Image (cartoon, rainbow, N blue to C red; front, top):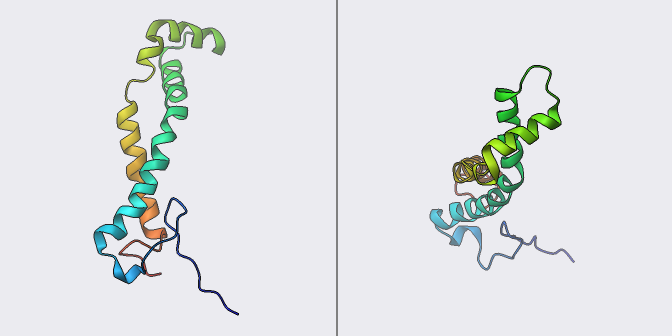
Length: 113
């Protein structure tokens, strides 16, 4: 007995219809939605660390230890400014991830699968 392959959405759910029955908008929305969901979680981890490293590279004093530089910079900018630019980063990562996901997914209207 051969079984038909199951088509899954980016969230892992079965697709209720065949690919040919969906319009281009729906075919494009699924990978974009999956990419946006992924991209929304990543910046919360990477952004504060990137801000601290950038500030450290720009403001580190000669001979200053890394740990003391981090403490000084954090006191200068504070917790709130650590998150400046987060929304921009979310959109950037969502755009890049969705551009990567679109050609690699079977649902994309422009894929050859």
